[in-house]
Image (cartoon, rainbow, N blue to C red; front, side, top):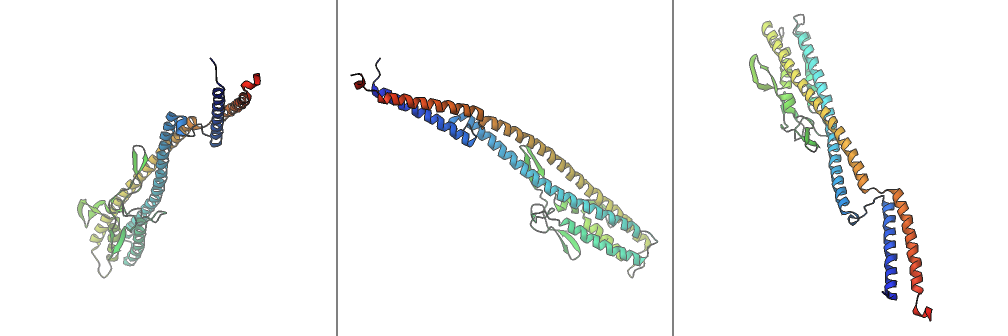
Length: 318
């Protein structure tokens, strides 16, 4: 079979272009560090890389949510710890004032400290995070949840609870609303058992202040027996309030443990994704360098062969 000169010429050009294309592709791979530069290099591998990157982005978002949740819960935990400390101090003062060795003046002085402790409770209930958002306001976290309306502490927030996605199938509450924490205490009111009706922490402490200011020996004195009955009931309500708040402490701690556990799971998954992603798309430089040298030799051979073919003519044999 005879091969025309034009055919040989065309084949030589094609061979050089092919070698040059392969060489340029290898050089591009080495400059990017990726063996899949464009999807056509490996359609199946490209689809896998896309899926792995999407999984990586989702998991990184979960980690961001965990960071936000942990920060919020840690601030809330600190605030709740302080609330418990305030209530413990209030209880100590209540027991002192309930002692008959205390006179009206001493009880009035204790009442003044109770007033300060009540103010501290309101301040803690209006705690904000680093973004200026109120922790205990529910969804309406840009507006102050607890306000003093004529001596009565009212809750202006809602009963919502923000949930953040921390895993593919796992959500967790990043905080608690003020109603659940401070306004839903099950105690007794004015000596009547109303365990099905909620009381607020502020109402309990506020009543204590009122009782101390109208204790036996003052111009508006109440009988000693009635005074002690009120004080004993308030102590019971304080115990109920502290028990309620401590329960909230426990749930916050449980959520923090859950976020840390999920954070570790996500971190392990990200490491696995990174390894699989590297195996799928990262270039083996040792292999690439060896291939580059072979392609350079192949290109040089093609160029030399083409030069010889280009010089051939029937006139060379005449």
